[in-house]
Image (cartoon, rainbow, N blue to C red; front, side, top):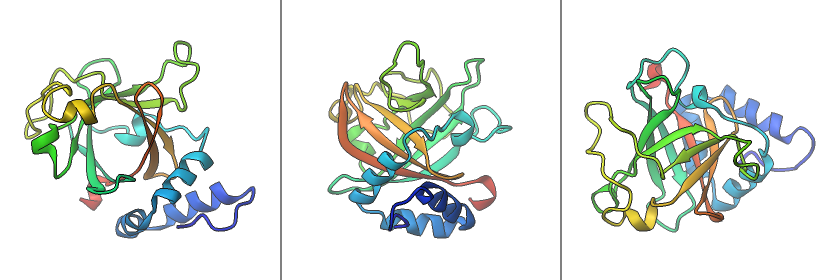
Length: 197
């Protein structure tokens, strides 16, 4: 990827290079990222915080879908989408699910994404979490039926999981899965803006 030689400017160089690319080029770069690249990005971008506006840009109507394309470090079935929307209440939370080829077996993997309460969770690795222990009360029209993450094979995939997120550039984020403790499971997301869809 863009990692190459590490110095004090590595993070800035990566972020700026990604911001100069168009959506198609960012997607191609993400698709080429290896598990080693993704782990390195997670470590390198410690302290670079994403927030709700990163995943669903400010001004987006509640319940309007925003797609983030993803690639994970699993041995197979690496490509997926996380589809977010702004909740239609006063919480400021995001609701979402995983759109991927095995959803018939695992279920849609619904989640609530929100800021981490740093006072309650001082050991959280980042300030924003995709939280599968919480399920949205409703969904946009066209999204799959909401089922508990303990149903189907989702109990082995989503149940009890939290994905902590770090910002890499204006469209790219890096996440790591936790189930009580950190897992060796990383993933990149690339936001697709409305004009690019």
